[in-house]
Image (cartoon, rainbow, N blue to C red; front, side, top):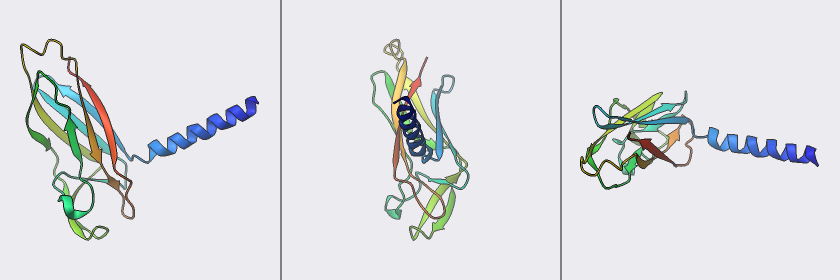
Length: 151
């Protein structure tokens, strides 16, 4: 019986490892208090790429989209800006012009904490929706939730 339990445990572990390994991207979310910016950094696996916000919605691939939940005491200033220059290419798989990132993705969102109300603010939540592809295939869109500690 113990042998079967161990086998089942191994199968579940490797099955879940395969699901999470298909992400091909590792995210890091942080808050820079001095500049009042949310920093969103992605490390992309070798051979894979991520589509920039500049990629037209009708081009085919799903461009990265960053959503930050509305919360009292926090005001978003402007839009979330990509801080690296994407590669512009004609993607034969989508038969369209696209913008993509390889290796690293970096974006920032300026925020303003309202003084009187920010005493209770400890964290900010949001999510990143994106799609990664290599030269021959694309993974289904993935949404990754995040929570950032503000203090």
